[in-house]
Image (cartoon, rainbow over all chains, first blue to last red; front, side, top):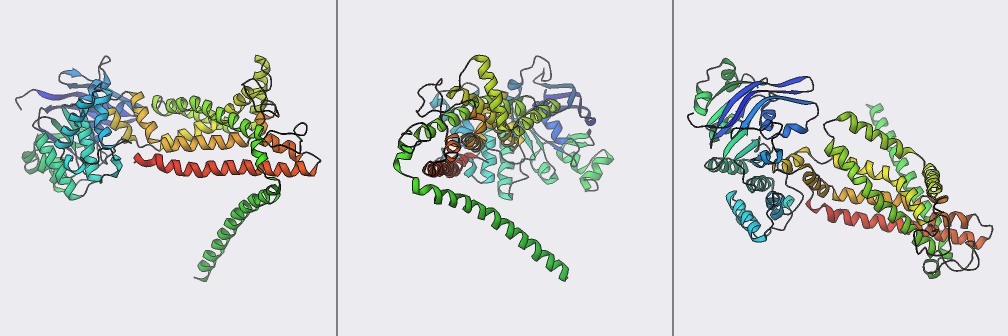
Length: 253
Length: 281
């Protein structure tokens, strides 16, 4: 990795209550690549992902130490503007959670709260993002229908479009396909691959085949620690660490 | 094997019996009110204020009490909602990191919820004396607002807690502030807000004790906040207490009106809740 990292995590420790969830995480996430975080359930994958856009802040009894630099700016700095940091990252959660409003308003929501009011501008943004996620042809005649009327797969693409509409640099996916059928899953996966031209994409997944299909790099997390980080094929086929080997073979899960 | 079958049958019978008792008493209550009140029902009851001397009158109707009730219950619900919504949002969204504080607040509202309405009436009365307000529409609204706030806060709190965390995260990760996120939550719970309003209105329109000292009673429809106002439950109380049989009958007619109002509100709410649920996940 010769390029400058997009997200640089330095000695990050996260405690929730008296549990030590993330232990001294240090990692550089490269720009405009797809990176998968893999590891067994409860190992801290999601916590690591959420530490990138400060969604952990609202967790009761959370204590975070260390640094997370995004574009060389420490997001946990006391002077950092949280909304500004979060705007840089689109989050795609496990199940789609459309906002309780119409399809159009879902995509327009982000731009609106950031001050875009002009109808023509919003129209253009909505169309652009719905096209980027391949939804436009499916919904263009019913933009004012409720977002909850869409199928789960369509809802997930809508959530992606909603995230893209605020102009992020990074897309965070938290097991974003786990609630979807195989067809919707492969649509989302293809989207991730095509979107990496413009965005850095960090995905949490427990499906190794998915990690292999979409990602350039893989981070293997186990018991709150990063065990191994490397290019996809290398990590999956020739893991250096014993733990990674066992996980990839399916001995630990 | 026979024991299990017998058990199954026994408890099934028990459940059916209990259901019959509940539905039976519903029809019995409504039936009695209709049976006793219907002969005295006429258009005058709902279009005219009492005539024939003071509130025990045989003529006219209870328009003063119908309108008074709507004023008191409506005013208290609106005022209560304006106070309760910020409280519910604060407990759930602004202090969600500090469990001790939010749990203490919840407990306070649980205690308030359990306080009998006569205490709110008495408390409202003391406030009125302190500020030199006479028994009036304003006094009634204040006392009933105190009564409905715990109901509203508790109901809103319950519905806000049903909003999935991921929905909050979704708006936050778009760069929303907490208040902008709260607005999304409020949109999501719109049907719940509606339920809370109707619960509170239903309780407010039927409560006697809180308005007993505070709202006073009048044969006229109140034209300002400082005039005393009649309410339906109080009118029923006075009418049924009358020794004159015809006035008692009119009391049942008033009860019938109150029941119909509550029934209409309930049915209306069912329809509106469905309509508002359109965007809900």
